[in-house]
Amino acid sequence: MKQNCKLLQETFVLLLCSMALITHVGCVDKNRNLVPTAPSKNPNYWCTWYWQNYLIKKGQKVEKVDPKNIYTNQAARDQLTEETVFGPNGMAVVMLPKTRSDFYFLIDHGWQDKNIKENTFFTSILDKKDFPRYTNLSAKDRIKQMNEDIEQLGWRGLGLWFRGNKTEQEMRQMIEWSKYAGIRYWKIDGGDITHYYATKIKDVIYPELIIEHITGTGPLNSKWDTPNLNY
Image (cartoon, rainbow, N blue to C red; front, side, top):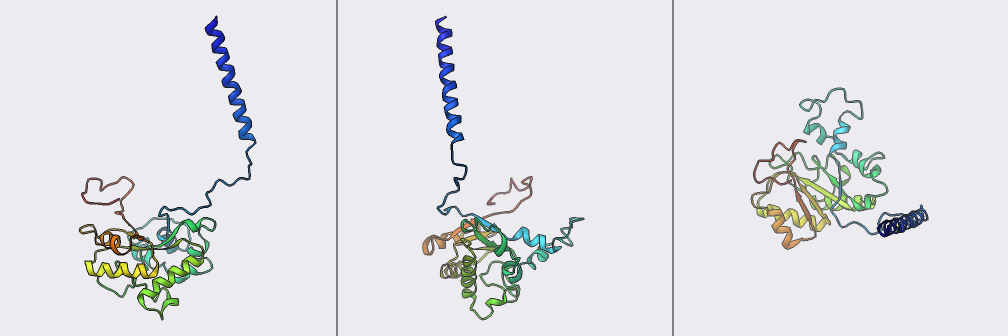
């Protein structure tokens, strides 16, 4: 009998606590904003790549996915222009209007000068044809001005995409340019995994630069057993 009474007492106490908790939750200000006001320190970014692919057919319904003839890398590269970034409906203008201050605006495959035939996609030279507003600026001033333009729109800053390999001397110059331009995020989408020059150099001369190496793969992780890949 005593045990039953004790059990009933404990159950009654738990019930009272639960009711008090429910009452407290119900009194919480529903207008309270739970989103932190302090900027995030994590290297969050919004990437242009999928929007570039969307623009290939200008938003038309995808009747047939054809990666060899329609949705090619080159076709997507061609969609990264001043108009698609800074125009009235440009990516940097319309995306993440309320939260972009926490995100780097990462320009992906297609921003570099396509007239450079060797190692085209591991340079810091912005294509003047695609971004004519920067035509009269030096190469390092182009990315500096673009970074400032992106920040003026409320983004955390400009992020740069790269692919390929550079010599140690070439990599040092690129990091020096990023330091000059205030670039604080790089995405290396394949390359520089033999010596990791980029990370070694930036650790010495520009530790504020965040560099992430990635190796893209399909949804089934088909390269899981390939050594020395970075995900």
